[in-house]
Image (tube, rainbow, N blue to C red):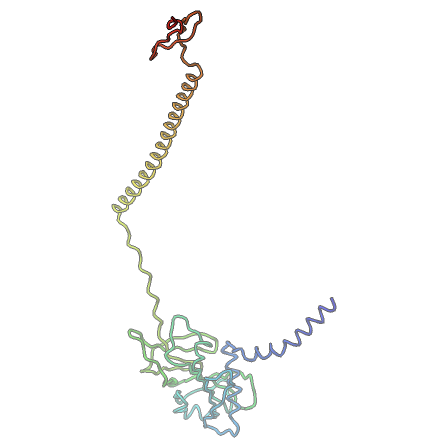
Length: 311
């Protein structure tokens, strides 16, 4: 038992580095976990932070394809002046931050080809990558796992101008989709072509409804008359089969009876011939001199005694 336990412990020690590597390479499918990771890497871009300047960050290698940026702002300046152009976002004046902080960081996300993985949307197809706009406290630019601040556009909405949009399928109408921080999904119409609007932070994209699969062609419903004809035809086939089977059985029985009768007749004939051969035909006796001998009814030559030729 002790040897088995030691063997298991050795195997566990040998496999533990491999398990750690696998766990590190496995993508995390939780959107909130992804937000925390991207916040950490976006804050790392503030080597020499300047207010109102966009700093592009670098994501880890296992998230290649995602783009992030960070911009540090004063809350009062954001409310008074807004941000006319921050990547695809146009932030108007009148944006309120809750709870109030002196400085905040607006983090921009472009999830690229990871959009559908972290934000699956059954029944819909993405026309654009998901874009995120999230607000965090800027008091400590080395902090991680920060909670989101609340921002709200109190006068005009925040506009999102999507630049990388796929062609719209014929007959489809693009829609705006907004994923809030609680995981709720909200749909709305475009403000203008390739443009959506929001009053709060979150993740945004353009989508269209996926075409429903074509229903399988239904079999034509048979009319009552055709059903009766089909039933009658089937019954006729059944009676033909039954009649054929019964006829075959009757013919087989008659053949057996005939064969038995022929065998019986042949047996009687053989018995009669055997009996006749055993009994034979009784010959008539006749006197020849002083002796009696059988004589046939017809003979070719008559018997002559030798005494008749004596001198």
